[in-house]
Image (cartoon, rainbow, N blue to C red; front, side, top):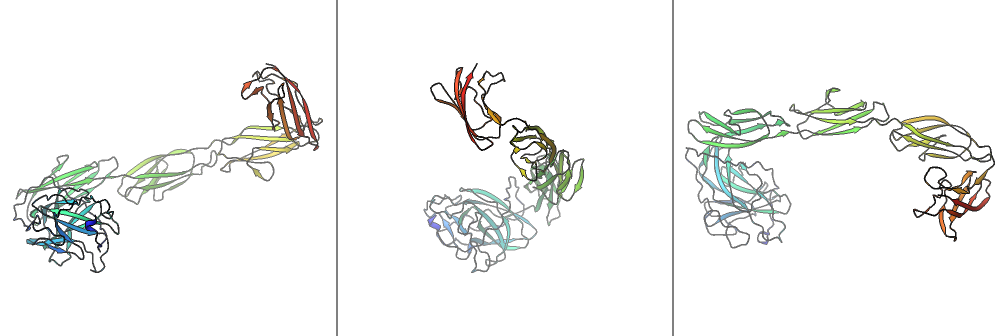
Length: 534
């Protein structure tokens, strides 16, 4: 808002307590303490506050509205109200934290050891001028007691964060640790930013009445259990007796145990004076969050798995256990575990525990699903092959015949003989064995069939070369009657299935041409016809 574009030096935001809302309050029989001019009636001004209120700030302003600005709202009581401005910068000139605050001397002091009720209307200034991006989107208010207008004083109450841009009624319980003659109201920034500011509206402050002085505390329950506890602690200076009523539940003792999580409200009544006060408190759950990192078994049947538990969300230190396996221990890790389904148990410092299942799987046994040993095709070459197809273990696999591992599962250009082999998976699990490659003692040549029948019976369905040589640079082409190319391949192990673009061709005679380089390094060309039957 351009109306309030001013540079301010101010303390950075401090932590905020819970706002106490009191739905049921019976007034005290003691003499109330009055504040003069509780609705700030006076002449509207941009830099002042009506008597008997005084302003305590450095280079900051308090003012009374309305002034006709579009950022105003109507007073909640009377004709004017206070607008207090605070910014989120550090005030170095004053030597201490300074916020815009207003106060006045009380008609009589508020005393240490007693509790007092005060109510007021509060709102966050509406934000209609969106061109000003430094205006905060929330506020909070503190009430301070002091011995003079110049005294910094003690913060005896502070609100929760307020986002409302319309009037709301708040009730505070003041519990001063010392006796004070002055009371101040002081807003502060909750949207922390080095440049933002907040304007808080204040109106219709009530008289101050003494009330019952007590605190309510809670002990949380374990997750899903009913072992929470709430307690009223009385701080009255009078010799009095009190009655208690808790809702829900209708309990009538100052301490109630075995409660599930939830909100509980106690009403404390003075048996002598008849006045009462209500206060609410939350019993929360200690919910332990478990994140278990599993390191699996390396090889089938081994016991080298591990579990590392990361626990959070409750009060440490924690105890860790594997149910029916390992008792409680201080460290979160479990090692040398075989494959199994485990139950992790984490117990916090409050005695609450939570369990979570963890599975350590056993990898499949590393074995050979298939091993093809292709013999040397003819007398004068070395074109034997070994093709490994492993299963189980943890892929990827590596293969070794001599001293060096390779990732490909096929070994080529092998001579006849016995070969020891090793297969290793990703966890270094090992499979070893021996395999023999035979040799065909015959002349080296490439033979092409003269007919085939691609009828799907598994017999002679493919037209391809029959190799008895270690050839390279292979190409096979099949042509139709008019010389059109029907099929082509450079892989000797791939043949023609009698189709073109997935469609069956009619039976008949087709022309083929095969070119390759023989094992003696001679380029070769063969051609002929193939008859297809269906």
